[in-house]
Length: 272
Image (cartoon, rainbow, N blue to C red):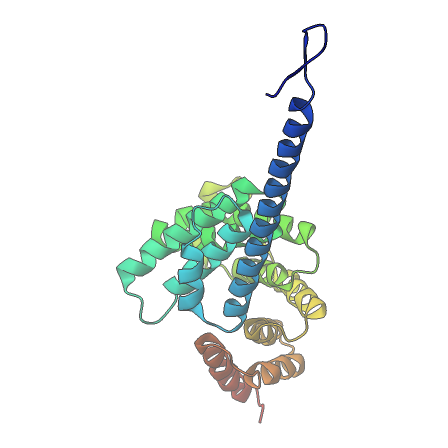
């Protein structure tokens, strides 16, 4: 600190205060600039991740997000959960690697939810990844998680009523329980006082809502609309949606497979 002396000999702070104020202001500006840079970097990375996802660049997306796996940021974590799950579903992924990736995706989704309970995508991907876990832990675990999965999907829709994917997945949940095999119903009756139940009508409602929110957004939603109408013995509407499913422009191998299934089913119900 710099001091000046008065004629009486007493020390007077003449230079210290403005100098420190100037230094404080400079530090503040540096912190502000750093925050802006970090915010821009975050937004650019998320935009890059979303671009890679829309381009079906699964491997590149996974590698990009993996570099940021230690970020305490729900937006990065749910995207990493999604990318990790997508990697597990690639045809060249070995069985052991697939299992590892399925559990890793679930952990990422769980962390995303812990970081931000109000992030609709974190709820959605936690529900999806938790469902995948059931494939490895048996029917009791899968059924035991069913209410948790439903609740997180409903929360995702509550947080974002315009998210067609959450509506579609909830439709899948309803469809699955509408045609649950009798032996699984017996297992469910043992686990729950009131086992999960649903109907084709309820499933159809969610599939239609998803399509209303975002028309033609997903080949599987089109296929499930056709399939559900078929289960309800409405062949004309089934043919209409199956036609849309088989004519859907494929972006992935899964789209191609759904188009093939839609074509086969369409012919069975008298379509051309």
